[in-house]
Image (cartoon, rainbow, N blue to C red):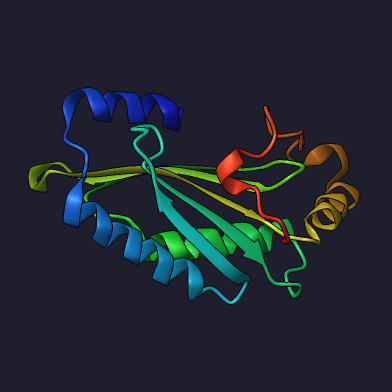
Amino acid sequence: MVEDVIQNWVRNCQLSSGDKLAGFLDDCQASLQAQEAFASAVVTSTEDFRSMVNAVVSLKASVTSLQGVADALVKAWSDIAYRSFQATSLRWYEEATVFRFITGESMAGLGVTGTFIATGAQYSQLVERYRSENGNLGQKIVGLPGGLPKWAAQPAL
């Protein structure tokens, strides 16, 4: 659903660029780094209007649940998003938690799309814990279609 919202925004509203986009990148870096659950965050910009801002976030070993990953991403997002409009999706996959977003202030000519990917050395253990605690009642966690994007690959998580 968030993909449809992004497409609609791009057709009808302006996307951020230049200093406005640079400021958003700085806000993402600061907010993601401020989360206790995250060991590091690498934020980059792209030319792809569907995901102008990408961040790969490494989890600290102290993170013990997928819900903890989700909570940290949502908390970081609350400090980043423009207040007049935002749409997000969060999904757990076998390889990582993926947070997709669009946020904007149409009257100010601001609009940013992006993807945050959070993973770490213990991520597969978090998935197994979720499965054992929730069985068939929880979200079905599958592999990320196409695997992790190249920009999210890190030599050591």
